[in-house]
Amino acid sequence: MEIRQLTPEDREAFARLTRYAFEPTKNTYENVVPMDYEESHPHLKDMSQVYGCFDNSNLVSTCAFFSSTVIIRNKEFPMSGIWGVATAPSYRNKGLVYKILHKILKEMQEKQLLISCLYPFKFSFYEQFGWKLANDNHRYHIETSKLIFRPITNRVVREVFTLDHIKEVYSKIAGHKYNYMLKRTEEDWRRRVNPKEPGYLFVCYNAKDKPSGYVITRFLEHQPPSPEGVEKSEETIYLSEIFWDDRKTKQALFNFLKTHMDHRNYIVFSTADSNILAFLKEARIKANEVFPASMVRIVDIIPVMEAFDYSEKIKLVLKVIDKFCDWNNKSFSFTVSGGRAKLEETTLPSDVTIEIGSLSQIIVGYRNASQLYDSWEIDCSKEIVSLLDRLFPLQNNFFRDFF
Image (cartoon, rainbow, N blue to C red; front, side, top):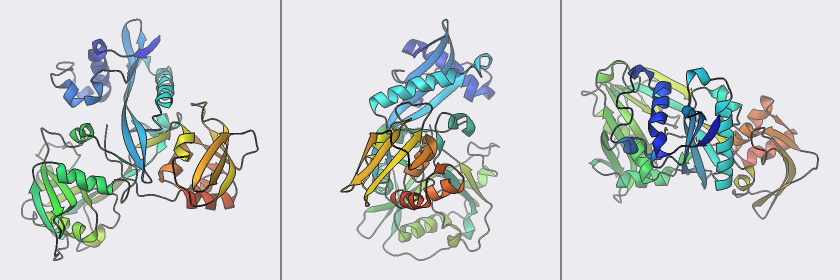
């Protein structure tokens, strides 16, 4: 068995393997490498971030990643997104993905891609490698007529035909109103808003005619089950994305959506805002689904923890258990002075012992130390738990860039 980077000549073999893994219902390899393959899969332009395991000349297992930037607690971190993990049926359960991921994580560490994110096919599979749940998706399925209309001044919703003002709103919100979001590049926006099926774009403007929110709507056809898994899809408006930066904008967008009540009976959307039922005439909705979404892993703990601003003086020994990355699997003296942290390897007895996945959850703000202490996932005193809760409070995570 040989593990190596793929080349453009391996593209069709990669496409066949991932088709069988992720699109088996197509029951064919016809057009497996379409003419617009680089457009529909922009991360595959040169194949340099795709690894595979070969049995002689046959590609039997793959794993790909791409580079981006994620915003955590108002700090930008180089991020690697894992995708394209697939293994031929007869080669499964042989540890091939383990070997590929180990090689990829080492490359990430060398390139200082400090955070790694993925959307798992099975959470327990990736937990053994140090990834852990980082955000939930909250999807609401509401009746359009049940939205409360409140007159709002100094806000107007207008249709737009470019993403310029939508990008402006997203930039204001990412890392401020919501945490753990991608700093989107043009390529990220193309993946998020398909140029061939963009939907309808609407921006809310404030009194100074500055964009303060947006919604991207799509009207689904009747094709059960719909791509979004929505029942009665022909009666439903699907919101690809909706954001606002203040309560007037939020209400103005809901007022706008309510005007569709004679057009479509239902609205389906995802948001990290938990205060949605208060905008309905009655707290009864067709569905409110909460399901686990992405997973996160700290690739290199020292530069990540040293990147944040701290408001307290700290001196303790942090023992990190990371069986997959030996550069993290150590005890560190963790000291903070003048708001800046310093981590150095040490042999002193530990004050805190924690696995890399649980530590990753604390850092991104999905869970706090108190929650981990309650579930026996951190070993330390209650005083240190309180300290960690102050240093890394819970955040409103909303990772929506599927890959």
